[in-house]
Image (cartoon, rainbow, N blue to C red; front, side, top):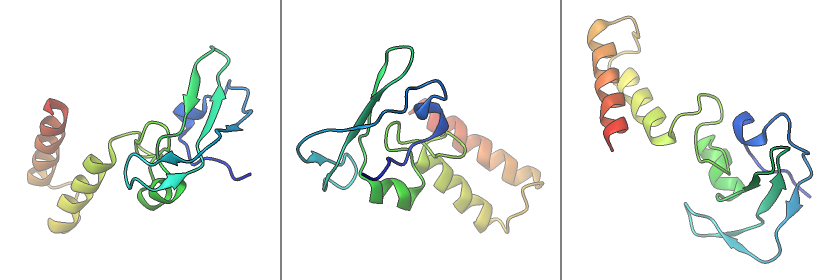
Length: 112
């Protein structure tokens, strides 16, 4: 059995970490391919379940449960657009104009 690709928040350091494979093929919410879904129960009683296939999650560095970036815990689209802006602007994060553009992007994302 392979393990799901999940972030620290969804893994919950206090969870029992007893992953169960869910029977039947489940459809990835991103690419619509069939994949093996997993579920587990946290100590607080919350049932966690994967929604993305392993390939989509790994390619985009996104959690299979919440879909957020596994390092920064932000939406993957926001991360990608921010990195694109930084790259287009020459990568100088200390530039005030660049910071303003990034903050505008963050505000735009929060509104939607």
